[in-house]
Length: 400
Image (cartoon, rainbow, N blue to C red; front, side, top):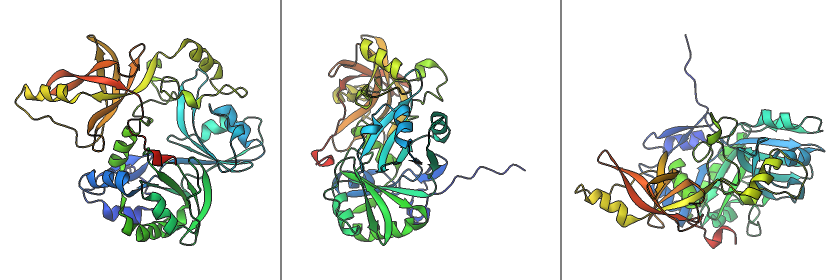
């Protein structure tokens, strides 16, 4: 008899599972995680932007890369200059195939002179080994032994300062430090996926519940709220952050060439450097930089009056999505399709209907007028929209 596949549970499952009121479980990298703990995402999202929220991000793939050639391995693999990374620094980066198309994106933290931690959305253990040929390097998959929490929001620093042994006031943006919570040795990085002030905690999996309990005990006075993927999705759309398998396909999993994207096409130009030696895709990326990308990843703002009028024509009030959507929605200019939105939501903070989208040249300049397809009463209609520079939301507190 065939045994049904069982999803794994994160090290925080004993605490998070009883909190999920609507049983809104979802799959993430083989783990069961919460879409939302409350019946709607509103309270959780409000905590992200007004107080503090904690996300269980343990399903991230995590690799420890060590040894004399650890930096060389990563440098030949990714588009950033790893050799320039300082001790305690974190880099966000992409890595590409030989044709300059993105395989995955993630972070690299320099934990020691020859010790790095790579995080990714997809499994990359085999790819790391393929690139390590001839190098003196160790590669350890620590995905299951290392739990992770994202503590995000304007009061996240206050919560962490009270819970941790060492204050985090001096921890700069995209830096990492050793710390301790409830007697557990952890690492704290000033990183996150909400576009707000926030931190990520890297915790031994067998001590995860102790850290969770200590954070929640302290955070009660600050409105600390466990939050799920729906609230995270709204925040990352407002922040203009790209998501693998939603906004782009890994080049290793794309079925056809048009499904692949370069860092330039994803508007991640700043992650591509040419001031270092050879790396995967460098030649193709240099050629693309010279000629210019054929696509760009942009923000789309849907014009409210135009959107509302489509419903008024049917004697209906406008209908907004209750949760962020992840779908391909056509974009038009002058009657011709020039791109597609890949995810979108109503922004409670900005009071705007927003989307993230791929738009063809030359239609991706900021303020370019477009139209987006909207289905009203089973009919395809088009609402006016406009290209916006990302991010939509970028508060000073994120970096200061």
